[in-house]
Length: 173
Image 1: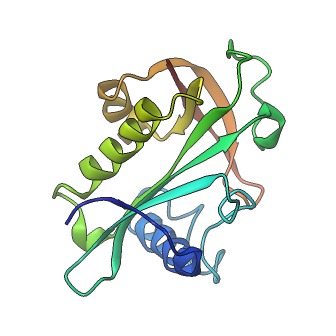
Image 2: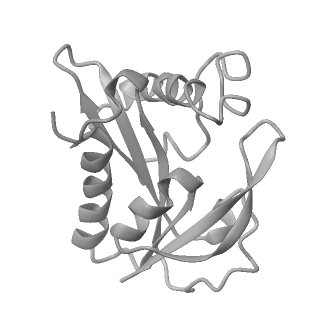
């Protein structure tokens, strides 16, 4: 099982459903669950041509892990207020996140493979000037190991009007 770039946008619904399944088995279930997101957890960035999704599949080709990088040219495309953060003004930049691993696949190498796929994409893509992600506390050490550094906090809207403060990490190139 290795992370691979999703080439068929027709499989996005599987990713949306995976995100809900992953969050339902986490401390964030009050924000993301099947009741609040019966059609999966997604936003307007997911289907864009400039958004890349990596997946890990099991032996039956079910998606058990996913992460995305939206390559954007305007910070205003982010729903979160980032004006107070010291961000580079160079564009384009990669907005990384929405990492999800199926509860039955946790504890293996799925998350690590997704992390490396994102890091390699950023490193290999010379047009990307920096990368940005908003991280739940459980993922902070992992993104630091990838080379990101903390630049503050944002109020993160989980999409249903509920907000929490999430740490913001930056990777300069």
